[in-house]
Image 1 (cartoon, rainbow, N blue to C red):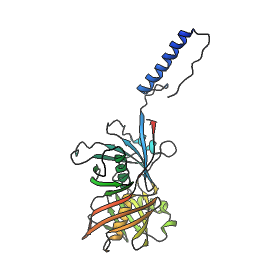
Image 2 (image 1 turned 45 degrees about the horizontal axis):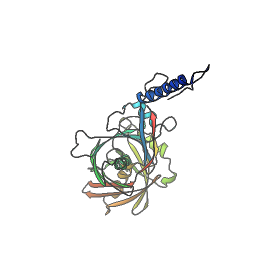
Image 3 (image 1 turned 180 degrees about the vertical axis):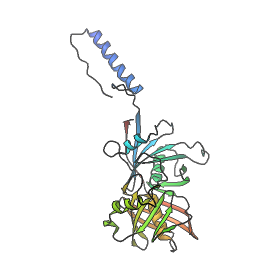
Image 4 (image 1 turned 90 degrees about the vertical axis):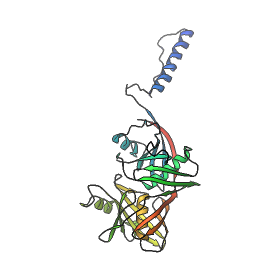
Length: 303
């Protein structure tokens, strides 16, 4: 809120000065409480938190009072790294009115373009850490997201999140397509560290096959018998992110298919994750994504 100094053009009696000063500060307190500014534009103060999971970063808002304005342009601006807070997405934590007996809270996820989107694995891990910070649960929880209920647990800053079952892994030429809460294209390449993820990911995401609905594109390299290196181009962000939880899960399942593996380590640009899963014929069940989720900072901004 912009403030202006008191200008005295002539001497004021002491009792009048005290009275004017009291009125000035009373107005300031009143103005801050009703949240106005001198441009006569109503503004609300938004309390937010910034979280990251292996470099996949999110603006987190406690929206249990349902006061957050779900406006696409506002969310896009808040996620802007130059003119806003900055983030790969924005996540609202809400009470789950429909499944309140089964869920501790609800996750509402928006991509950085401001549009509500499908499940985000790292975002899911971050909202678990956020809910734990808010004392909503102690060690284990269940929450509702756009793809259904998820179980999760947290210990020493590491979050283990149960993902949805995957019924099938389809083929697109030599590559694979599957849904782990969000749609993913998986392509194995050599020397992924020096691979042009933006160029190739953008081409596949905007190809005739996937342009309408969009798809996340993962480029994967096997770096050990039990470890992958994954880099992901994300739709909605329309760029590479440091990590994509559902993409890591999709890449891990694609690699684990028809192999005698029930877990695999995954390296991403922002750190390390681990995926656990049980194969049942052509499908996978009991899928868990594990890794760190940390609060970076908190703040307030006018919206």
